[in-house]
Amino acid sequence: MAATFQDLKREYGRQLEHWRLAAVRLGDLDAVASAHAWQGLEHYLGVALRQTLSEMVRRVVRSAESLSLELRGARTAADLVRVRRGLLDLRRAYSRAETGVEFYTDALATRAAPQMSALLRACDYIATRSMAEALTPLGRHVPAALTYLDGGMGASILKAGLRLWDGSAESPVCTIKVVRHNLFRPTAVLHEAGHQVSFSLRWTEELAAALRSLGGQLGEIWASWASEIAADAFAFAHSGYASVAALHDVVDGSDAAVFQVLPGDPHPVAFLRLLLGVASSRLAYGAGPWDWLAETWHANHPVRRAPADVRGFMENSVALLSRIAALVFTRGYRAFGGQPLTAIVNPQRVSPAALERLERAAGASAFTSPYWLWNESIRLLALTGYRAAAGAPALRDAAAQQERWMLKLGALRMAA
Image: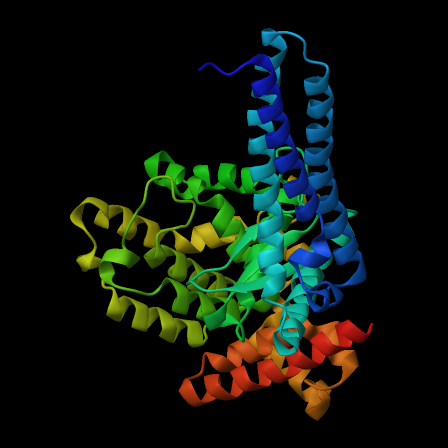
């Protein structure tokens, strides 16, 4: 028996109400994330996030209500066809809104435990401060940072200003994944903040053009890695050798992984990425422990073991690493007002000598005083990361110290 006009109208009305009610429930943000998680955010961060998510859901509710009015006024089969198309669009809109809400509420869920909430607030602060040090002198807006904990090897970012899954709302904050194994060596937070800064200033495009000047296919390949090179450079400018040592533990692996060139992958091949960090250290600071790191890297991954089809590219690239580091750090870019990156964020502030002076000046209060935690959190991260690279006992002590001062910084941020 064929469905009548009224049968279809009733069924469409039922489905519309289902999706409208689902969207209303989705918009109850206090039900999808704990009160403690929301309270653990900086006020302006929580307000911006709630406003964006609420408006995303309200758009779905308004669409459902508008379609319901259209259904009530339907008089012909053609009217019902239009409602049916609208209903399918509404389902898709709900799914996209749900994806956005779930992403952020899952991120907030990692902050449910008070201790983890404090640690992530410290990461929020480090990321935001690093962006401010680059963007504020250039008169640019500094987005808020929301960090969350997850597994895996590497961090990631959803940049502020990018369109969210619903296609209309923009991400109100830069949302940074912090991986468990590096929570107490979180220089990757600086790397991800570097992605946001490069996006805001459009540095990646300029850097790609500079790398393309290396010539030929080699230049094209290095240009394709510009976004990750820029983010690595930002992390290095803020934390020096600490970022290189932490990067090593993320990108090390078998020869097959370290020498693998994946077409379309924005990450430099691991073999060269680590050595570019070493070249950056030599450019900024001369000789140092990074030379020993390079020696062990070459011992573990001699270039002769690279696949034959990429070995020549690896060897030619190694010969150019000092030139590439100079292109990244000493060339002037429009993104920085015609200045080099080092004029905006000076890596000399985190040289081994500078970190030793910081430690002497701060004394025993370096990792406990609110003054030092507020004003020097990034350099303290550089200091503990530099120490951690010295060996197993040093890493153990540095990680414990990093945890203690991050907890204190997170508590200070909560009380502010």
